[in-house]
Length: 149
Image (cartoon, rainbow, N blue to C red; front, side):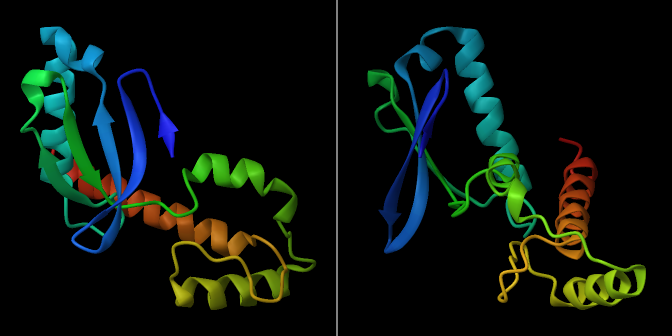
């Protein structure tokens, strides 16, 4: 699914459910600084768990930490990161033709309150969808601030 400086993320099954598994690299656990960063990230995920606008955290397996291995189990993001999704689908953005049509469509899409919605009739990503996503991001950020993370 992806790789960074300190971890690799792969898809797996956990108790029959598809999850993303973040596998911390040995190098991330060798120095006190990077180990502390990994532990802090896990503590934050645990503290923020349970909000629909924050990536779900299922737990960790640190049984092999002495061998330089920690597994972090997370909710999958089927479409990947939102920034990559928007860049890849930039041409699918559909501006509405009139202000009245725009107002009606935005209200309709806002009521549907779906996280990822590309119109069934292949209109593309609309302003209403983008506003809905923006609202959900703001709710997630408000939750993070309230938890003082």
